[in-house]
Length: 261
Image (cartoon, rainbow, N blue to C red; front, side, top):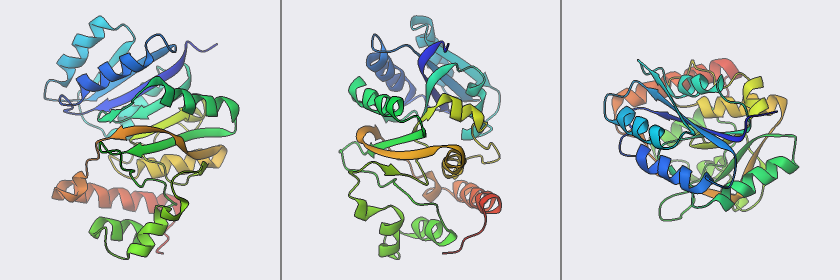
């Protein structure tokens, strides 16, 4: 028998501006509604992240803090959590995500309870102004990733197709490429695939793990529940992140096969 119904994994790196609000949001949403644990894996932050997490860990016993000395990336950080969890469902989420109420989570978990073939659920993701982030994507090709990186206006019809704009974002359906900002896994599936491929430092690990899930179960886009995400496009801001993105792109296509268009 599993120890808790729900586990939540959050990887931090210099996340002092987000982590307090995240922890308080999760406690408010979850406490008294479900058996849960919150796992924070810190990738060697040099700001006040660890200090803040340790403070709230003393107050809320359901927070478990895992610290590493170096930053090995998003996937590796989440995989350090995997060996500790013993839940029915496991959420991977970014520190800058907000859940408005337990009702949103309940709709996601109820769907997973009723659909045992589903190993991964991706809810609707909204911006702070409640506009929709277009994250209901097909498996990427080289062209799809490059034109999105260069400009949101380049080959606009192709970009609209890639994010399934014509779906209306209002119907439950299969998803090829779910966003790593918020993923709800059936824990048994998450463990069966071995978590994330930690060869990716950042970027493309979410496309990769969605494909791994789809090999043994089904990944679903579920717009009947939503979360709010403060979207950071670091790859467009700094050369370092651009190089990491290109490296991850090469790793992804070497693993899954090169598809130009």
